[in-house]
Amino acid sequence: MFKILKSLSKSLGGAKPAEAPKSKAKENTLLDKVNKGTPPPAAPKVEAPRSPEDLCGITAKMPKEEIKAQLKLLFRRYNRSASSLDAKLRAEAEQMLDAIVQMREKHFGEI
Image (cartoon, rainbow, N blue to C red; front, side):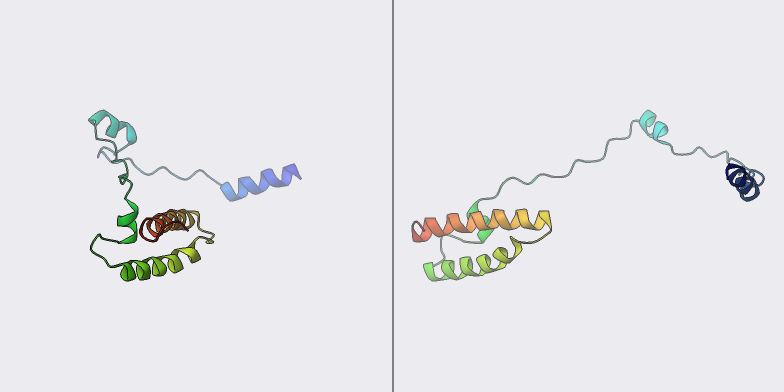
């Protein structure tokens, strides 16, 4: 079997393909970039943690009924996402649910 594989590789490989002529233009390799001192790619921006009021969209001027309606809407939306298979979506939902609980306790007392 080994002889068969050798003969197949020879027949399929055939002659080595001719190398393409190298152009005289300098290629942009990683070493060239390092030598030129190109700046490293920018790090992703990390947002500062937002307050629960900002996350829920609640202002000091809102009446209690409007706050209640806003929290109810947000709870329905993010409670569904809390059981998502997507880890990023699930983490965001958990963060929002914690903010909703904090706002509810702040404006309507302990649960």
